Length: 407
Image (cartoon, rainbow, N blue to C red; front, side, top):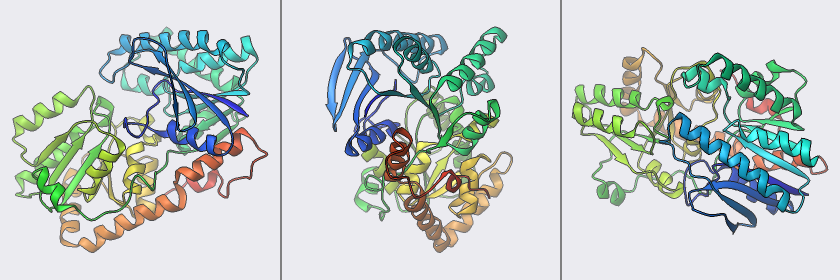
């Protein structure tokens, strides 16, 4: 079976960022599927590479996390337009596997189904347009109506839909209970991320010590609420704690965060540049807990963040700032603590307890790794996707019910 995989922001582990598509595509190739992938790149012209058995087509479509709203829209439109030109030139696939965001990739599926009679499966990573509407990025009533109509049309015409969390699946089923939705969440790469003792040489290299350390590795945008981690660092310093706060990533809010840390004189907050998955693992190796945060909007509670699953693989305790699916997992499986709105002082007290009782922290870390091994491996995700694409394959051992884990 030949699959044409479409992901505008495809990344490899060496490049860093969201590498879900890399692992799924590579896993499909290993299971005997032929996979070609179309993505965007910052090069000037079309390029093509073979990566781990995947034929990757790079279209010249620049994109940056720092782009404004209209720059992003332009990049989305150019990518769709160039995909429509390229696809007819390729050997005909059996189906398209299209991943969002952006929602506009769904235009490619609608076009391919109508013009080329090629079916498509649509993967929903984030809820569009619900997310930008709640964030306030889209306010025009006519545009909102159009986008919600487009969303429903994309789902309706899809052969099947893949949701990355129970919350996303529930949202889609509310639109139409008849939609064929399967949950394949993000996952941990247990070879790339693994529990490790703090490396003293590495700590010394970065001017760090062995005190309680909290790390964040991910996007630094408005919706990521990393400013709340800075607030926690401020309390810790005021209370005379030598705790360390490590922030790795890039995004529209990075300079604002750096200025805030400088203004507050927070000497225990350290910034690291955006890095590869190997560098993320190195960062987590210097930490005790991983910070998982989003802005306090209902739609963001449905997220299935890569940074959370990286932290599970690395065997880190978790601090979560919102009551979503991740919060439910943290509570049910005793992975760590919460730092909810208005309860920062309570979070600080819990961290003091962990500092005084390292065995409790160790149990959180062990539980994280165990959860990753039992439910969230990349191998299991590939099995589920392979079976979805070709029901003739052996069915996975676990169904959607294992992911609907409530507190």
